[in-house]
Length: 110
Length: 115
Image 1: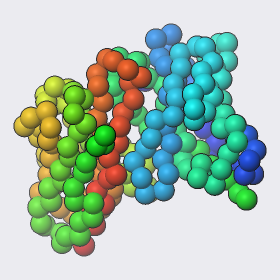
Image 2 (image 1 turned 90 degrees about the vertical axis):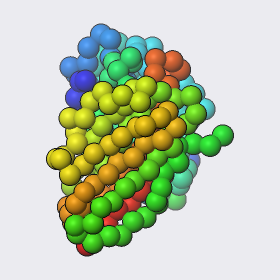
Image 3 (image 1 turned 120 degrees about the horizontal axis):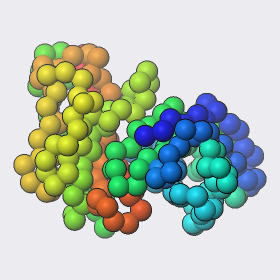
Image 4 (image 1 turned 120 degrees about the vertical axis):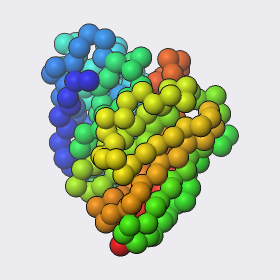
């Protein structure tokens, strides 16, 4: 699976949009971009995934650049409960293994 | 719906003792994963099973670690003998292979402390 690069930490004001970047310049054509988050002391939680089109669900939006070398996870109205470590992972869909990197520690502040 | 169930949630033991961690995956999921998380190394995949068969155990640190999945509803991760460096949070996750989003569902974890 391709390697990803994320900033180690970010801050966001409560109620504002949180934009979390991820670089995956070596992504292959059959690899998807997945985002998970881990709230303190809990197991990781799936957020969203995509191949090349932008995706949106009830939790977040995923914007993938046209060349697929980077993506951005958007939490439109961050709350204090969104404080967590966010992991960007690229993997082949049919391959169920997930390899976690360091992630981005998002701190949402009042 | 019941999620992935792990037990025990917390375990404190002494070096040299045997430790057994247990996992019940979500019913109908045919892939099961064991991860370990430490501050130093982050989340590491130890082993994963598909249809109760171990597929990749390259992440298992050494022979002291063993994992079994005797049936579709139960898996164990055993450490014998345990050492202080095994102290970590161990997560179990399950997934329905090849269908849905490819999402892994994680349990709450088992926090192991080896003194």
